Image 1 (cartoon, helix red, strand yellow):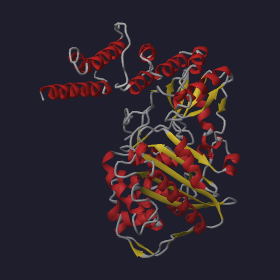
Image 2 (cartoon, helix red, strand yellow; image 1 turned 60 degrees about the vertical axis):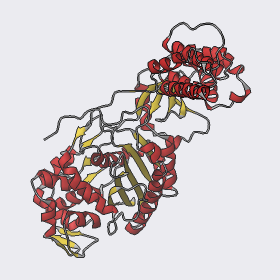
Image 3 (cartoon, one colour; image 1 turned 180 degrees about the vertical axis):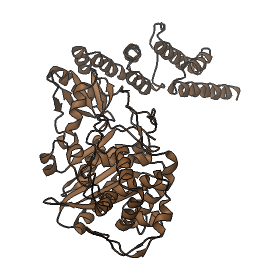
Image 4 (cartoon, helix red, strand yellow; image 1 turned 60 degrees about the horizontal axis):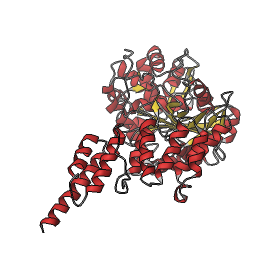
Length: 541
């Protein structure tokens, strides 16, 4: 009985040592393995544990073969590879190889290619155990060796380390075979060429999310942009084939009226002017039109009394926001639009929106307040506008290149991010988010679009452009309440507004259903991104 108790205790000590090893607590792991030095039951395993810890710490290891089969060698080797500690990786792989583990040669090949020694990596691959020849890491090493032979000095990966291609001697991006070039926005190529020299570079683009977005468009004309609202990383910026032929990167180049998504900015302008939007709107009864000396501003709702901001935003009442804009005044609206990035000649905001008609009469002031005629916006800027509501009131600076990496895409080191720019006080966010939640709730213009596992806050807008039909901008953030993703769905070239809205609803619903199934990697940053914004710019006001 005593022997059984002693054996059980030593097994527990060994298990705790392995657990500490997995956690990276080498000191505690070594103490556990040392405690097994004289154990009649776990002596050899304790010796193996001590040898591994000594190797990781760069200390001499006693000669003799050890049995590493009970230790998490793959995890230990992956950590060294991810840390880009090639000396530690080589030492550990050599220990594994000497112990007869087939992982040893695999990770020696990884260390060789990361050091730029393609010949040595090829030699190690040639001697791999048959069970590892189709291992994902072995395939990645083989691809890196071939890229080296083809003269691609810098390899390119997506935000999660999936291979995209490589940069040739001229700095041009050569895509991996089978890669859909529609998933890689051309706007990413310039910052990619300017990125600090490294063996590998990670884009902000997420291939999986980009493929989801491109598939959601189906046969419709338009674009979809997904942005990490906390970091500004552009996760997807895709368009249909015809739109992509019209513009190099439609997300940054296609301008359309923002339409009713501008009502969020008008509400912010009212708050900045000291107005209470609920009180102002609750006095309004919408008849479907507001008449001015120079013409009529029409409203598709026209159903009588409004019950405050949430109600007006949910049904997207034009007359209420036109009247709210009149209370703010033209200069107040223009100032607010500039705070949100319109007319900013700023490299931190490529594709910024434009104020095309800063002057005009009262009828045109109403248009300015509801996003018609007077302004236009790109899909990227629209997505960044949504991001403000998930990023503490600050607009992140968009980025297409996220991190330096090794040749295997396993050791990212994030590039410094530009500062987010304060747009509105954080204290306003609960009120504005409530209004956006009303848009996605029953009775709102975006009702029943989001699946249960991906609740969103949204704003919708519909407008037209002479010669180009009707278009829709749907912006939002999700999953609520701790939203991480900001999105813009733009549908264009539809013959009428019902068709445009129907198409936008179909596309947005498909997109959000796809995002629901990917919350396992949306709720946390990619390996190249910190968990929260690094810092903010000083407030503008």
